[in-house]
Length: 234
Image (cartoon, rainbow, N blue to C red):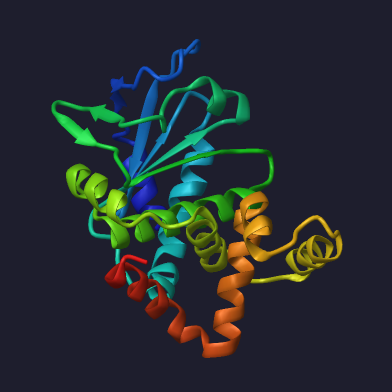
């Protein structure tokens, strides 16, 4: 893995990027990238070390995530890493449909993972895992072609808590912190039913839902429930 990164570092390229117009971009970003077997990891000036870390983590985590989801990455995914939250908020990548121009047009549609560094490498690793899971789930449910993605998304209108929860469930094990958060929510008296809770805290509610299914019906059956959802479009 390190050999791959070292070899790629010597040929990192500057790429012109066409962005959507949904957000005014006040800062100019000069993007370079590392290419590894399954990912293109894009970084801006000052993000070289972050990009190496992210590229390595992505390759390390991919196989285990694919086994958990029971679906494999169909083509290389794009990871865009920002040096901090301010850079992330000042860019318009991730809004609408983005294209990366490099001698031709390469789609960054849903095979795109956009993350930023908050100073905590554990959080960054989790963000990479969540991004990979989201890419695999989107491809599995909606396809990776823009036309197919749009039409399938219209037909398969799943609640946010279901998808966000599944991403959280695959990316991170249930832990004491999540257990405390769930108990606090249940004891707060704020929610009359699951759907109110899921509307306010979709990732936590959805993670708890999938964790419950895994506990009740065995973890190996969880991907099958998602498969049935896609088949029956409900």
